[in-house]
Length: 322
Image 1 (cartoon, rainbow, N blue to C red):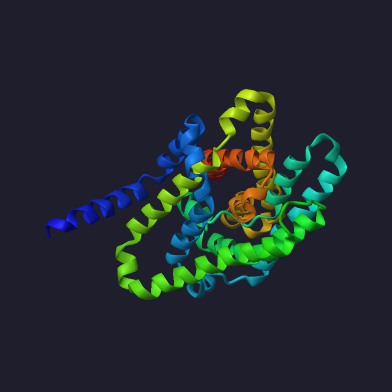
Image 2 (cartoon, rainbow, N blue to C red; image 1 turned 30 degrees about the vertical axis):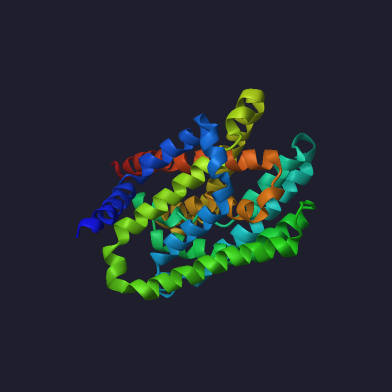
């Protein structure tokens, strides 16, 4: 039909985006960084983008079937305790000890990072890296489901006063997570298993588009901060990498007895946190430097997977050598 070609072109474009997502992600960050008007224009859509990304990821998975992949509930419980209790307590303790050298806004950012659930895209990246994507997915979904309770509680425990009450933050998080889950369930029911399987490349492409918009929006204000306070900005970049790598190292050591693949999966999932969920829920209440740290966290998110894959492959070769 003559009028069908725009839709066909759109579907082909989404499928191509899904196949080249990694390269597109890296470009998107620098587009937002180097073209501030683009970042400023899409920042108001950050919450919608987080909702859309969560929905597209949940459309791809049946939670009941995903849970069937986990045969060791003790492992899941131990990891979730480390994620929701251990990490926030460690960070809050460090801030209590060294809070004098860290500003209020940056400290708030670190707390939000520490209590954030794993990235929604962590499981997909685990599959690409040869790790246990199913386990990562279960942990991500559980962490996301608990976030409306964990994030406000940890922020209040750390003694931060933001321009939004803990109850309102919890309600916004619950609404965001719940709406995405319900939307995904409705879409799955409407499309059916066969159509979903056939449209997976397009769904992946839609997720890539959401991540691109998210990455561009996150860069709002970063270039001006870099030019105005270069040492401060570079220090935050180093801190962002240090937080992710530090968490990965600690989790890898704590769960070393579970085996190489499982411990790497837990480490990667626990080190890649979805700050965007809390940031999107806070909206205009996010302080400027808290936002800047959130923006700079995107660099380790998009750059570490490739670096870790190279390091782990080299480690595997050394281990396999006679």
